[in-house]
Image (spheres, protein in one colour):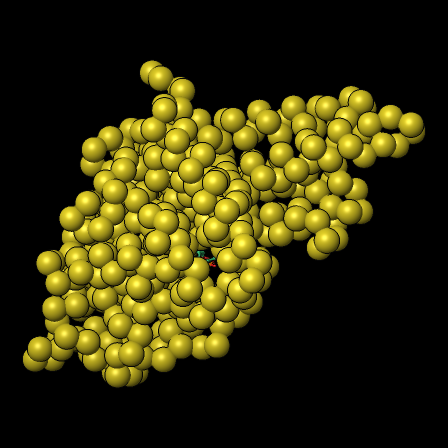
Length: 386
Ligand SMILES: Cc1cc2nc3c(=O)[nH]c(=O)nc-3n(C[C@H](O)[C@H](O)[C@H](O)COP(=O)(O)OP(=O)(O)OC[C@H]3O[C@@H](n4cnc5c(N)ncnc54)[C@H](O)[C@@H]3O)c2cc1C
């Protein structure tokens, strides 16, 4: 077992930091990168510096980097600024991964366009009555001639306003089983597709409702005919590690900020870092950060050439990091006192960035169910028995 970051990974981290400082920070300072238009421009800018889709195969415009390198890049960019961490994650470990692994040649063109920063791709799973119980979704696609005709409703879908396609999970058969669920690539200009204006979440990001009213897309847009959850879960674990890396980046930034602040701020005539109460907080923050990184890197390194991480290792990394990142950002805020609680300092922003990690990609409770099922060797069926 080798725990050291190798030379290639170190170079990747350093060059990402340098591109951020020299090019992306000035761009972010001069543009509203949180608007849809600003996100699109920022995505193009990041593609120009080779920061998108780095784990995608070279023939699809990527650099073919291993999953662990990809996560280190996402983590580094997230620590610089969440807007770029988010785009790096979506273009590499987002919905695009499923298209790269399972798509036909035409569908794979979308991967090239995503890596070039021309388009963004969302993922639509959650419904009003099917959150954690995702396989109880009702959205349905009927095959009519050369088209899939979709009826239904999704909610809490990220980044739709700045994206061009959604990988939509929906029922493509009528047996009532979870295996009926397939995945269809829906362009956002498809007839019958509309979206809400978005709900603002705690981190000031928009989450959208998607409406499919006899929405028509060609049958060639079907990515998976059946058993999408079964087929996609190993790919989806890579996506989970991508969002975990974003939490690591935010927690790292909060920890470093608090550490520097504690050495500057004086009370009682001394640096507040002299007080043991704060020293132990900083020590705990560092222990949690290192442990979260090691669990995440283990899951990523274990994926090897397949890029598909183990589900138990992924769930363990997810639960630990979601809790640790929340605690680290909360302690960092505390170390800054009232300053930490204002929006003049980055702690509030960092806390809100990691808070959602306990909910999306499967809540921590659902991941604990999965861990328990795995270690007990039992099925994870949570449905009420009649
Ligand atoms: C920032 C953010 C971004 C998101 N982006 C997307 C996206 O792009 N696409 C998308 O499709 N969805 C997205 N989601 C939605 C997300 O996947 C769901 O919120 C999540 O699956 C939980 O569903 P729910 O919110 O309906 O909670 P519910 O399922 O209603 O759960 C409520 C509470 O009950 C607990 N609970 C439920 N069942 C069990 C059980 N069996 N055992 C123990 N506890 C249980 C949960 O842990 C939770 O605490 C996003 C969510 C957030 C916060």
